[in-house]
Length: 366
Image (cartoon, helix red, strand yellow):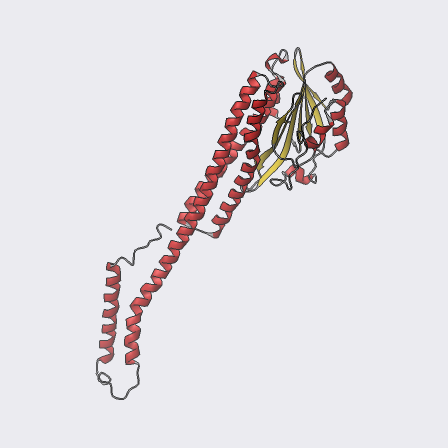
C-alpha cells in the first residue's frame, strides 16, 4: 500500500494544452481510439502480445513475469480503468495517467515512479507546434506507458530492438527501459531545436537584406514555440535531481546513471532554448535597425531634393513677382540666363552634398 505525502502523485492539470493537437487526435475530436498491447519478458526472451486481454495480463502479473503494457488513445476510459484495476495499479495513479493535459513531472515513492512528458513535434508548418501527452509509471515488475495519441506502433525503435534479443530480463531491466523511453522523448527535441535554429538564421539574414513585417511575425511565432518547449522542460530540472537524491530502490545503478545523464540533457535543452530565444530578440533588433536605416535613407533622399530645389524655388519666386519696374524684366536673354543660373546653383548644391557623402546608400545591399 502506498504511503502518500500531501500532493505526491496527484493529478496536476494544465489550464490549457501547451501546443496544438496532432492531426490524428484532431480527427478523432481530441481522444484517439484506445488500443493496447504488451511486451512480456519471458526467460526465453521478450514476446509481444497484441491486443492482450485483461485475464491474460493479470495471470502474467500474478506469476511475477516482467511486463511492459503499452496503452494508446484515451477514448474508452472504462477499458483503461479496468486494465489498470486488473493489474493492481493504485487508484491514485489513474487520474495523472488518464487526464490531459498534465504538467510535466518526475515523481517517485518507494513502490512507484511516475513520469509525465509531452511529445512535441512540428505540423506541416515548422512554426506550428503540436503535442501529445505520454505518461509512464514503473511498479515492481510492471511498466506502463499511456500515450494520448499514438497513431502508429508505440516506441517502434526500442520495441524492435527488444524483440530481437533473447534470454531473460537480466540485462534489460524495466527501469532501464523506462530510462530509454524518457531519453527517446527528450532526444526528439534536439532535431526540432536545430530546425528552429536554421529557420532563425534565415530570418536574421532576411531581416538585414529585405526586412518585411512577415519576418517579425515569424520570429514571434518561433519565440512562442521556444517558450512552450522551455516551460515543459523547466520542471524536470529540479524533479530529476530530487529523484536522484531519494535513492529510489526501483532504479538500479545503470538506470540511476542514465537519469544523471538525463539531468545534463535537460540542462542542455534548457540552455539551447535560452540561446535561441536570444536569437529571436536579435532578429527583432536587427529588423528594427534595418527599418530605421531604410527610413533614414528615405528622409535623407527627401532632404537632398528639398535642399537642391529650395534655392531654385527662391529664384523662381523672385522672378515670378509682377512688379512693373524690375531691372531684368526687359532683358532679351533674361530667361536663358536665369535658367542657366538655376542649373549652376543646382549643380553646385548637388556637388557639395555629394562631397559631404550624402549620396551614399547607408542601407547596404537590398
